Length: 293
Image 1 (cartoon, helix red, strand yellow):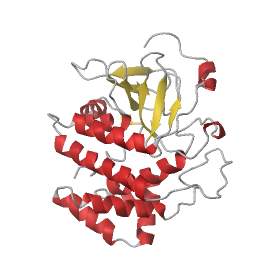
Image 2: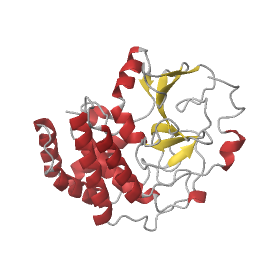
Image 3: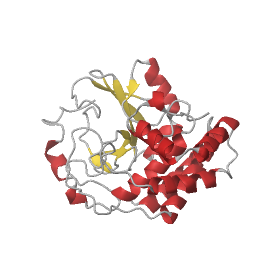
């Protein structure tokens, strides 16, 4: 850690750095390509390839399912807040596309059984599953089915976020300013060293001044961990105040990094942080307990 922390959680520069809203086609194409690029030689290569197929199905769902904002009021502090937004059935239509595409993927039997359970679930049951996932209630979830459910919700919220106007979104002190979800990871840009956090649900990216905990906003007790032999492309930023960490991907060292895909591919760093006594401060809908079954 170098240099004094900024005077406030956002800092003067943070006041003028714009939110970056997702472009769904580009997002899912890049993410799927990154999963495929990371798979060869990786200990979890088969899982990464399966996730590449899942993300490609997300891209197809974006094309086939019309998703719009409608006439909803977007004036709240969280315009697409996950606990307040009146979900339309379009997310279930996206799920149907994804389930159909996933039938072509050679998943292991537990995952295939989870796909079958989702396909046989009534709309009310799917909505209850979605409520539990968005609220972070893992004890109410079918964890083997959660990545597919999460994939459909990502399609839905990403499409909604893409239709917002950047200037209409207020800055948030906690979580994504668009939907309120936690970040999946952060990226540090090469030239100006700005840190952007990436939403685990809608993929919006918002600036947060470096050397500040992304979970509790503490400025003291921040430290960094990395794997032995890593060239510095990824570090875990850990907070001694709340005992959480968030991965940061440094694009000057690894310009092809994509927050969600690279987060899955660096599970060894998660294991290291668990041994050090830290918990994840972010969420990856593809890394929930049981997601790799």
